[in-house]
Length: 212
Ligand SMILES: Cc1cc2nc3c(=O)[nH]c(=O)nc-3n(C[C@H](O)[C@H](O)[C@H](O)COP(=O)(O)O)c2cc1C
Image 1 (spheres, rainbow, N blue to C red):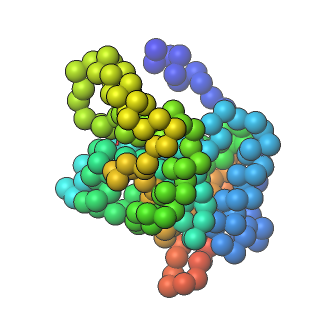
Image 2: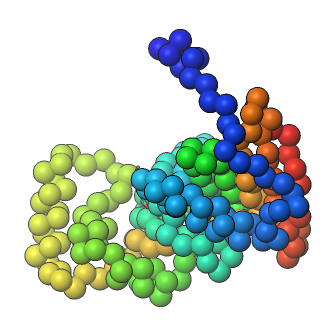
């Protein structure tokens, strides 16, 4: 195993990143990189890793799907009572990591998270397929369950209860992460990668180059 891992080596050479060429706002830079990434037709193009921490600093991370870049932040949807939901209620600082190997890019975001408005969550919930809407009721996300059958029973129950008009569960909705630091990483040969970091200073963004 060790050898197998140690022999894996990429020499990154698909692009470059210069301070002079990045957008003034990190969300604009994100949008530009995302549209180039999407053209490579990756699976789950909007997947990212969300790291959260408890008030004591115990960290946990998982993959989620990005559903919007709007109103100055990064948006995703989940169960407010889940493990991540509990950690975000205790500690609003989170980080998002995007890894796009097709373009040899990484984007890291640090910021504070807040719940989206009821209206925003409602609008997105309505746009989801019926099966996913039912799923939000079925799964007490991150709690222990006795069996898969229990989930299937709950699914049947909620399908019969709601039919084609599924209301949004009060424990399900959106979050928006307002970035304070955003780093764009472009792989370069011999590990001399390009790293440009945006840092929020008041209402302005400053950009700096970081050592790889
Ligand atoms: C590709 C992929 C996309 C996912 N998207 C979401 C999502 O958008 N929302 C969500 O709640 N969980 C999503 N999950 C499941 C989470 O990774 C995680 O298992 C779940 O949210 C429970 O996390 P928690 O116990 O830390 O709260 C996704 C998993 C994968 C692998």
